[in-house]
Amino acid sequence: MAREQRNSVIHRMAQVAREDFDARAMSASKALRLALSRVAERLFSLAVTVSTVEQVSLAQPAIRDGLGDDGLLLLLDGDDGQRGALQLDRQFLASLIEVQTMGEVRSGEAPSRILTRTDAAIAAPLVDGMLQLFDEQMSEGIPGYVPLGMRFGDMIEDARTLALTLDKPDYDLFRITADLGIGARTGVLNVLLPRLQPPAGKETAASSGGADSAGTLENSALNAPVMLDAVMARVSMPLDRICALVRGQTLTLPREAISDSQLLGAGNHLVAPVKLGQVNGWRAVRLLGPEVLSGANPALKNMEKSVRHTEGDEADPPTPSGMIAESPKDATSLPSAGRQIEEQAAHSQHSA
Image 1: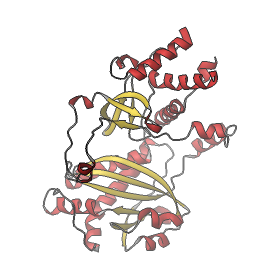
Image 2: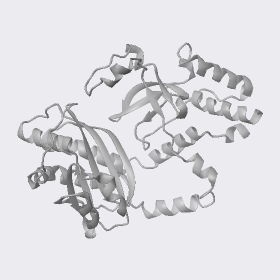
Image 3: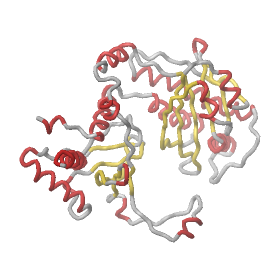
Image 4: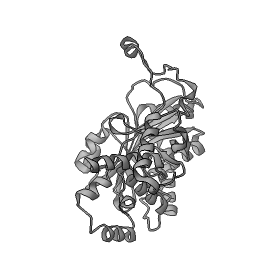
């Protein structure tokens, strides 16, 4: 019974993410990612592959520092007097202009120049189409969602002026990093929206269900985010070569790096062997079970044997391999090898 009640931090994180994913197939980050890619392809035949979507909560006084003055700043007008903002960095804006004027995105960094209202007019169709499709997907995927009705408003000179225009106390900043023109250039698009409120039913259920454990140290620790790094290979080179590395330079990796990668946690401790891949357009890693540990990761294999020897017949059977994607909202699963490492650590502390 005690063994069944033990949950590692990683296991709890995976369980919470999986339950959240099952509860709603759509999220604001996913809706923005899909809307941007589809509208860019439909309007301009521009290939946009979103690599990451980072969501950050910003208080109104932090808007100026959160966005900065680099790139094209646009004011968004919404229903009921709501306002938001959108920012395209120079690489994203240059790619958008090039695909409309020359039919393709040129490789290389876009030169720095003064931005004008003509640039804002060129970006307006993409902005309106993306925000309209965002509302449509959120309405279809999340019951009770109230559309924001955001659309292109005006060009803003700097972040200070923008911050004075926005009066809501809290905002959600979505920082989207995308490959443009099939790898020709990488751009960043920031979308600042008023804080999205959950539907009334979910908000009530969440508040009543977590009333007993809210504010406790255990609840905060078990639900804390955990950063994991997928390492393909390690390359050793002299310091002078490292200092001479430039963007676009190619490094040679062994062919087996894709199928023999490792998932590392804090302090570079080994969590599990993984295989690189993708899920729904996201870069992802597949967690491999203990059956692949022979020869590849002897330390992890020995750890698993130690756990089975300690717990005897009560050890959990191997679970199927799962997927961890870049976004914490995607479905994820913890393999038995990773769980047993955490259980071994707990057992060692108890024995000590």
